[in-house]
Every structure is written in structure tokens, then in C-alpha cells.
Image (cartoon, rainbow, N blue to C red; front, side, top):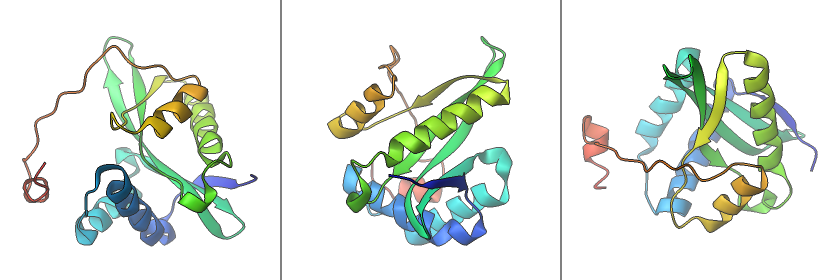
Length: 160
């Protein structure tokens, strides 16, 4: 599939919110509050220091998106870029949309000069996503993910 890839702008907020909510419902069976997700997406768009979204479009139709955030590594004196909020609508899956998004982010990371690698996390049961990531050369990290949540009202309402 041919698609135009670009950084998201304020005009993409509604699409990104729709995509993020659909992804959470599909992969984790979570109904994310529209207002919280909308505020979160707008926060990234308004403050590029938090990260950036990449949108794939076929013509004028959004066919996929992802979010890139940064993590500083003192061990490497460089950033890891985290790929998050990946979503391709079902009718566009299997057509190479994620591959295009991923390769675009790889290219941006290589040209940035201060990025040591790409990382992402995936739900342990999402075998389709794991297969897609492996086909792009990503390997399972030796690290396990631990977290502590419930620091904000929106986290406490998630009932993890």
C-alpha cells in the first residue's frame, strides 16, 4: 500500500483519539475516557518535547498512526525512542501500513544522531503484533516491565 507519512498536527487530534480508544478497546478491552485521551493527545501535539505522532494517509484517509516518546539513557548518552499507541484500522491491516510507519520512524531515529534504539511494549497476548514487530527485526528484550500506577485521578479510574 502506498501512503503519505507525516507528523501529526492539531487537525489530527480527533482521529488520534479515535484510534487510541479503538486500540485500547481491541487489545486490552479498556474503555478509555474520551476527555482524558483527548487531553493527552492534545498535550503531545502542543508540546513536542513530550513526543510526536506519525500519521499514515492513503489520499485523505488516515490509515494508521503511532506515537514516539523519548527516554534518556545515561548508559549510552543517547535516547531510546519508544513506539506507542500503534493503530491501523482493521480494513487496512495486512497491507504494510505499520511497516511503512516503523521504517519511517527508524529513518528519523537514524538521522537524529542522538538515538541509540527503538523500543516498544506489547500486550503479552497480542501475537499478531509480536509477529509484525519480529518481521521488522525487533527482538524480545531481556527486560521485564514493572510499573506503579494510580498517581493521577485518571489512573485510579482505570481499575487495572
